[in-house]
Image 1 (cartoon, rainbow, N blue to C red):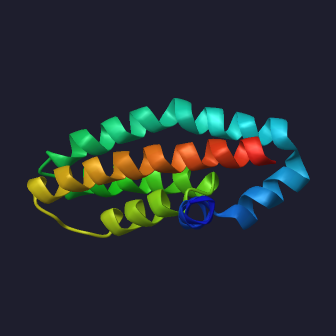
Image 2 (cartoon, rainbow, N blue to C red):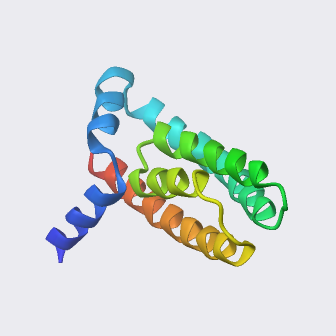
Length: 121
């Protein structure tokens, strides 16, 4: 079971990026980076949710772009990739709503993996 957990973590986290942050900036700074992400992500998800119902696709694109940048900066690979895919797509409101739910789920999983990774270093 531990092997499966390690594989899942690697799918969610850019460990090379995080290890680089850790060696250059120290664990306290990496913890602060995660805290900053946690403080911002609810607003980003809220913006994406609102944009999903907007008739202006640029709202969707901009909101997904912000989420992509935030996720990428803290090494959340699956959230980054999903945000990048969403940013480039013109979807129906129903499809966008489904993706918002998936993004929130992936984000929660990635945060859990990030916290586990932090505990292990």
